[in-house]
Length: 292
Length: 159
Ligand code: FES
Ligand code: FES
Image 1 (cartoon, rainbow over the protein chains, first blue to last red):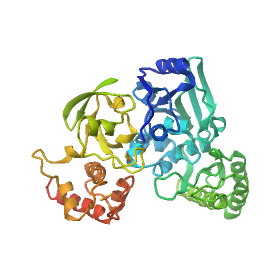
Image 2 (cartoon, rainbow over the protein chains, first blue to last red):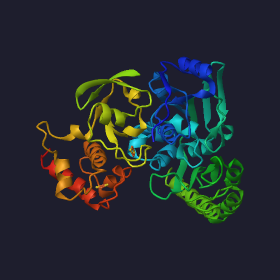
Image 3 (cartoon, rainbow over the protein chains, first blue to last red):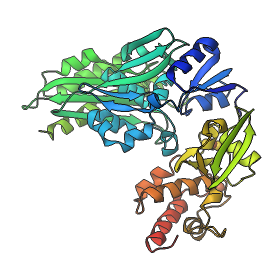
């Protein structure tokens, strides 16, 4: 189907985009890569009266590595994660997740911020952001604010963004050098489809193989991607042995709230959450053990 | 209406478009370049793939007004200057890489982009590159073979 008619404005700056959002309110939508929004418009699931195109705003197309954060502006395309090794060097989980995201045609066009603002509960980038506890910087004519990932995703296709706000930057924490291991695993009907369930894990080990820090998150098994900082804390001090991981996976599988749909039952998704938790934790540990 | 100017297959083209006109509709209906096909119109099938500034994208997920000033290559732009088929296109014929042809322009765009960045792709890389393109006829095997054959012939100097 074709999208319903709308007015189109190309914003030259974030200020201009925010002014347009302020003027049109909920009738306006931001567009950058359009890989989530345009299909929804084609199916008439959304009918914005005004599209504000932000993809050419130069300041929204930058990324930089700071001491503690990898800062990615909202309109950076997903293929940049594949091409620029520095991003995955700073945040290795990004490099693990990217190969699960869509197809080359969509990664060439889709943006990092767009995937987050769309907030599909089983999408990969929201899961990375939730797992690592990233910060989302948003701007409106009222000013700038920072939303932690734990409150950014509020439900399926829903975020804490107000109608007049524009996501401008994502700050992903850098864990620094050392014995860090990461893993991202998912099960989808076909490669490139949205995950039935995806699990992301990142661990840091000391010289004796004892876990000093851990992060764990699950996508596709709740209305939004969820991180489990309390469960991760239980892993600290262990050698990430099977018993420790099994206990975490058991609890996690009880706490997720998957839904049944055409593709998979809630019970199967719960089962996947359990299995993939074990698998990702093991893979992250084994990778960390190879580091010195 | 918006006035847009872009390069299509190396030629500067312009036209008037509604904001909601997709790039594929502009290419097919306004420029009458009907080699690019449109299947699902919502980013599932890959039939509408074109190169945008050299990179494969789905032209049904882009509004024409968004690509003002950019450069697009369609399947018409893959042929040799004299209009005869490129090695890649010819390889699709050789291996029976197409039956009805509906997916073919999208497959050619995906394969062309792959070979441009990776002259000796593994079978896995080939399957990954065409992973976003659906074909209801061939079962994909002959398409993979076509791309393998094209890579081999290109390594031998053919274009
Ligand atoms: S027509 Fe564009 S992906 Fe199907
Ligand atoms: S040849 Fe018919 S769809 Fe591919």
